[in-house]
Length: 246
Picture 1: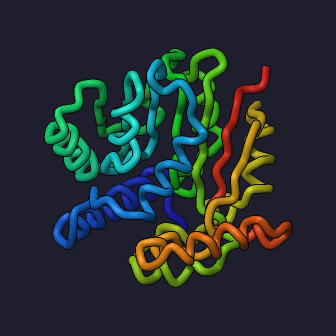
Picture 2: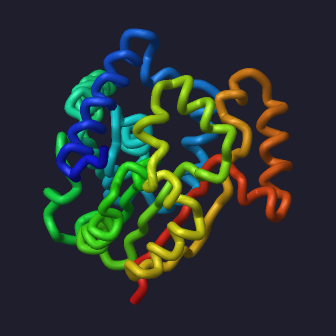
């Protein structure tokens, strides 16, 4: 049965609230490891001059990226519709005594229409937003002149992540038309229609990056696979650095 927008958003919010509670009980959400450090450094390579920049992380979750970025950036704001995620976010910010970052339970539609951010991040968010054109139009309004949109997104062409999604009980909220729409060609066309230019892109990983915690050999394997034309279209993720077209 097809859900309307409000029902779909409520379902996703409740699902992520449950996931956050379960993850909090099993292990530290902010546990540091090789895979996360590599993922974080790759994302940061798409962002320059952070010490003088304001960053908005839409769909920030528990602050997995927003909090490390706050240690470098001038100011960071994270928003998410999951109230349990933001509770964890705020607790970690308080624990680390960071003063330049805030987290809010908020839908992107409620953001003020003023250009106050140098960077907007969408990390694994696009496939959760049916109203992608509305989201991109909102981002146009909140980015400063010459601001940058960074998209870090699943590649639905990589079938190795299907068993991972099933294992982590996330298949139902991912395996939808928004997930398949997130392939780099369709996403590129949507960005172009919305008035954005993709100034750089990166094929990220191939095999699940959690394997980096087992052995560095998997990082080398991914590097080789992602360097092969055509085969790299099956990468696990793609990262896009976008500018508003003048």
